[in-house]
Length: 279
Ligand code: PAF
Image (cartoon, rainbow, N blue to C red; front, side, top):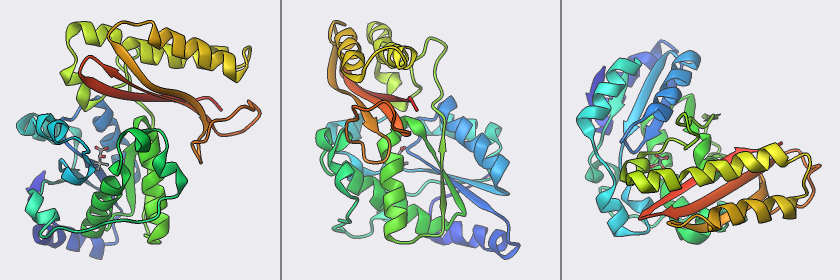
């Protein structure tokens, strides 16, 4: 497995792969890798000839400087995991490589940018799409893999790809959960033993909604799910919604074909998100 830090080195390694018309997959990450990331690498290996993983903690997508500062960066551990995963190339640029000069990035991501995460983390998706565009330009992958856990992120990245008509296929991969249901996340590392226990209410509420989707109406489902979370001490609910998977607008009609439940909450000092596709 090669590890490179510059776009020039990355391009010179990818040149022969492209000349040989091999399919290149990119798995963009911010490091602090877990089994969820490995599942992305695994799926990427099944669908492409050459897998690139990027590790870059992107400053422009953090709305809180403290959050950026405390973001976990266990680099050696990440590289060990990637070596055993069968990843072919790791791109690990310093900030100056991706942002040689300050840039004002603003593109139209549509109204869904401002909902849910966009409401709580203003400008977040401008930062996410800015770095993903830079990574796509550097790697020019045929396929790029993202986790469904960041449901809204995948939607925003697809918008960006459409906006620039980029020839890359976005693949959404299923959420990987711990045995007790907690969605895997790099941020779980910050949970105390008590927080870890409290955090389970998020997946429990999602499973409740999934299991009662046929028998209860949407206001009843929302009421029960929100009550479960709000009655858990140590958990502060930001939102629990049942929404259209394309627009993220709340839905009232269970007959729609693309319905997803999405939740975000602060558990102790850590903000977690999760979701479940209902139809
Ligand atoms: O999901 C993430 O880890 C990040 O938002 C991403 C897509 C790598 C962009 O920095």
